[in-house]
Length: 169
Image 1 (cartoon, rainbow, N blue to C red):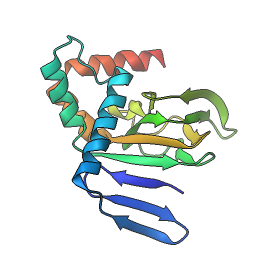
Image 2: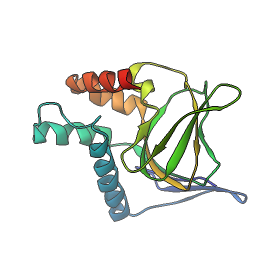
Image 3: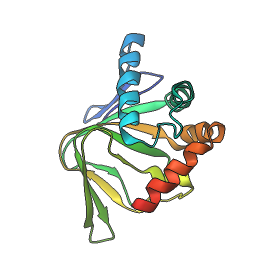
């Protein structure tokens, strides 16, 4: 079962009973924005390179204007290799396995708050290079690639941070 709480429109739940939407209150959205901001700051992808707090806050505000909250149970697939890259993910809690190829060879295990994946879409890679599956129950934030790209267009110095992180992967 996957639970999704979009950053703007409310709660969506997928279950055997079908899809239903429940509206979240503004205070619930604010709590989630704060949690998402904290997770983004842990990644170092979203911290400004010059330490300018005002600029960092403006950058994060742009990124946080639209995001989803996802909850996956162990064994559920989060993204599939070769699928379109439309979101990047930041774990709030849990552990995921990164798998590659038809044989789904284990490439990496990612665990803990602030760990991210799917960021290659921000760098223009349109297709997923690996499958990512939940190893444990996972709570994560999903950020829309187009929203992140718009924020990076306004804060181009951040693109260098993304590019540097990509080289390390």
